[in-house]
Every structure is written in structure tokens, then in C-alpha cells.
Image 1 (cartoon, helix red, strand yellow):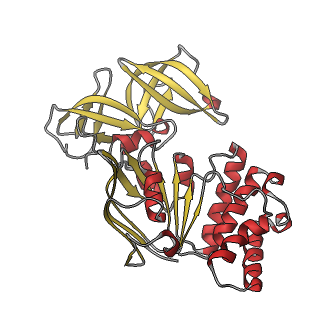
Image 2: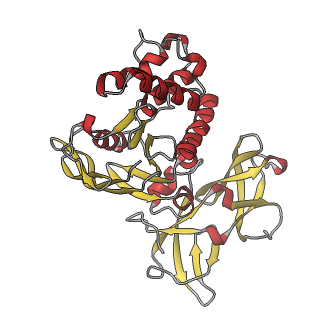
Image 3: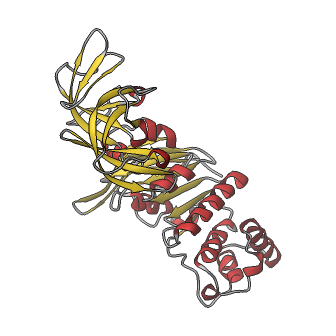
Length: 363
């Protein structure tokens, strides 16, 4: 396998910037996920790594070697596409073997051994004589992955490979990809717009927006300590509650005043007292109760339950609190009803503060 380094990599189309000064250092055997909304530059970045798109500025290194101008076939990279891209007239075996036959000098016995090894890893040994139209979507995706595996490349690239599958099959294939990475120790760069895929698959995830890297860290660090309001809103379902407040410093700590509520946080304020600030609270960090005290949290205010959305074991309750509207994740065993008056509390240890102008998190 190999390490991968993108150094100030950029891509422009005329006057349009698709990717701007991207810095990423991907370690050997790491599973890196590029995630973001449509048009954020993640697929363009993947295609630049593959050599399918030229790099306008910056450098791309694989194992310390500059491959910025190296043709795709010489980069020792394999790519799995969203559309599978299988030859419809060939069997699964031939789809997996064809690239080796045309681009390498491996003998027939070695090619056959590689195909059967990949088929065994992917549990598709009994499908090798079938053609793509005889396979399900998940089976076709396994064949496409197998075609990449037989090449034994330095880096594997995946471009939204699960987006054509139904929800149940996506869950199964996520687990299979996680297993493959763990067992084979491969270096993976994976593109998706699905934050669940990013959180479950990635060793680290790179969140992108408008061609720029917003944050690159472990999934839980990105979730718990988002670098800015874009990351806070994009990662997490439902998204983080962001409330515009005023803040000041007192002897007891930092006071956050949301007009309809007032809470105190420990620590020193990172901005001048009295300035506007955004308070970030994830739905599971809010508490609803009929009492005036909340264990592990702090009383905020009385609110009114609006819409309630059942999810199974838990539910999402929308709570109107003055001019704020918050979403709380609650247990269905204590399900509030629309119109019910509730006391709303927050786990103050998890509260985050963001600059309302720049959007960046305060320390």
C-alpha cells in the first residue's frame, strides 16, 4: 500500500474554481472519506488523484513520489465507480481478469489465481460465470470491487460506490468494505455525500464545501468538535441546533443569554463580552422534562412541543422556545405530545460556541 499527499492542489475550469488549495496527508493503510454536498469538489479531487483530471496547481505525491504529471495507468491506482462500469457481454470472471490481460504480463495461471482470491474475499466464487445482467446491484458492485482488488494497486479510489443500492444493501456493503479494509490493510480514498457512510467507514474524514477543505479529522472529533458552523450543520442527523445569543463574563463563568433562556458555562470567554455568538447544541444533548431540575444538565426555559417525528427507539421533538426553534432527540418511552409544555435543559459540558460572522468555532 502507500501514503498519499495533496499539497495545495487546485482545479479550475476557466474562471470557475472547483477545488482550491487542498492540503491532505493520507497515511498508509488509512481509510479516508471525502464528504460534502453536491458540487463541493470531492469527486473532482478523486479524479485528480486518479489522473482522470489534470491538476491546475499544486502537487500530488504517492509514497513521496511526485505523480502530478504521471499518466493514470502509471500511478498504480484502482478506481471503483458509482455506475459499476462492467462489460455487459463478459462474465464476472472476465470483467475481473480483462484489465490484467490487457495491461500486464502476468501469465494465465497468475491471473486466474488473483481472480479466485478476490472472489473468495468478496464471497462471489459462485457468481464468476454469470454476466452483469444476471447479477443484483450488490453483486455487480462486488465484481467491480474485485476488478480493483486483482490489480493489487497502491491506492484504492471509490466514487460513491453504494449510491445505487437500496438502504438495506448499502448497510451490508458498508460492513463489507469495512471488513475488507481491516483484513487487507489497503489505502482507500472514498467519496460520498452520505454522512453516515463517512462516519462509519472513515479512519478520518475530510469535509468539503465550495471546493475548500473545512475539516480533516477522525469521525468523532468532527462530530463532537466541528471546526465551523458548516461542519456542525452538515455532520449529524438531524443537524446541530445553532442559536444566536449574547454572551458576557461573570464571576461564575460565561453567561449565554438567548433572550428566552439564560445558561452559564465554565471557562473564560474567547470574545469581547456582549458580542453576539452562536450556541451549538446537538439534539441528543437536550433534555425534556416536566420538572424544574435536570440531572447532568441545566435549566434553560419552558418551551412548547411542536412537531414530533417517530424514529423507532427514539424520536425527534421540535420545541419552540421564544424566537428559537430547537430539535431534541428523546426516548419514545417518554414521548412528549404536540402542544405539551416542557422544561428544556442542556448538557452544558457539550455546548459549543461559534463566531456568527466567520462561522468558526471558539476555543
